[in-house]
Every structure is written in C-alpha cells, then in structure tokens.
Image (tube, rainbow, N blue to C red; front, side, top):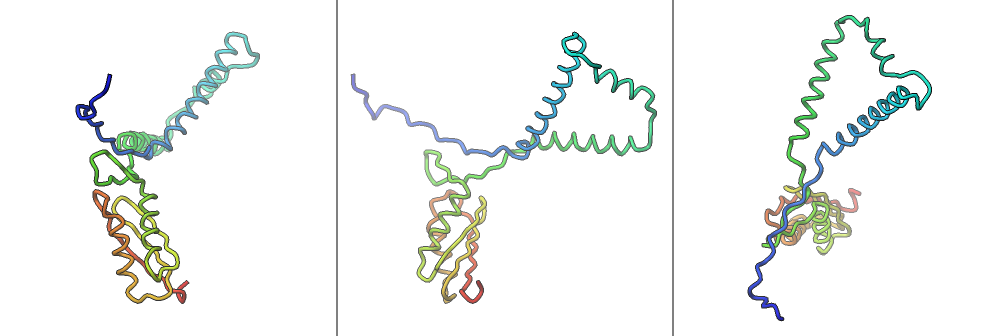
Length: 185
C-alpha cells in the first residue's frame, strides 16, 4: 500500500513558547510553605494518634493566641497582607513572558532572543575591521558592541550586516550599534 504524498494535509504551525513569568518564583515558595504546613499537621496528627510522643503544637499555638487583644500594629499588617495577596493574584493572571521571536515562515519557527543576539554578533564579527563583537537582544531591540581597529564608517557597515542577517525575522528588531576602537578599550 503506498501513500500519496500530495493528499496529506500539512501540519499546523507551532505556537510560540512562553516563559513561566513571575509566578515561576512564587509557586515554589508557596509549595514549600504548604509542605511545611502539611508536615506540621502530620506531626500533630501522629501525636494525637499516640504514634509519636510529645505535645501537639497547634493547640498550644491556639492557646497562646487566646488572650490576644486588638492592637494598632494589626491594621498596617493587615493592609500589607492584603496587598501581598492582591500582588499574588495579579502575578498569577498576568501574561507569561515571551523570549522567542517568530521567523517569517508558515511552519511556526521561532528563535530565542539569545539566539538572535548570537546571530547579530556573528554578523557584526564578519564585517571587515571588526575584531570582536558582542550583542544583547530583546524581542524589540538588538544592541551590538563592536570592538574594531578604527571607526571609519564601521557603524553603518555593522548595522547593515546585522539588519540583513535578522531580516528573516517576522518583526525585525531595532538595531543599535556601538563601535569601540582600541583606544577606548
């Protein structure tokens, strides 16, 4: 049985990868706090079941709070806790970060911003007169620092080379070039 390659439907394009965002830091911290609370509850349950010797900690903590009276410091503490809770909700609902840039294609090909920086550095290093180049990139901007022997029109050449190398990107970033000569190093 042979498959006719002309009748197959193409694969759908890949979706853009997203980062974990700020909740990636908050989540593990909350997980550790919940594990600690679970360990405390498990310990008190084992003490109540006489599987462990000792005193239960939660009833002792509740007894210590029994004579607690309202104080002025509770108002700012409550406001701070409410603001932290609001920040956690906003952080959880905020869109996740994107560190990839789409290429002009129909198959859903993406480059990470660090790879865009590598492409820019490679393009800048290929320009005559450039000794070394380094780059940083975001989704909207690429900053190139080129170390060169002299700055005779090199900025325009490096900018043109980097812009040409990044042309296949769907939305090419803005290119910023700084040329440093051996006197400035």
